[in-house]
Image (cartoon, rainbow, N blue to C red):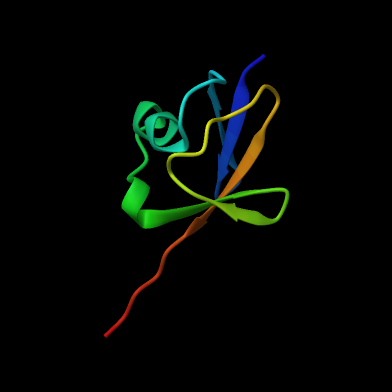
Length: 64
């Protein structure tokens, strides 16, 4: 079963067993512009996606 990335209400299906960083790359999302969360917990880019994972992506906003 695939994992799912959610960004701004848009869903991206990605295969499980790959890292968050690789999943973001396959979905065309810049890994430096988002933070990934699973079940409300922040996860790192090297975390391996599990079957049926739902990863919510939060956009990083910076200012100066």
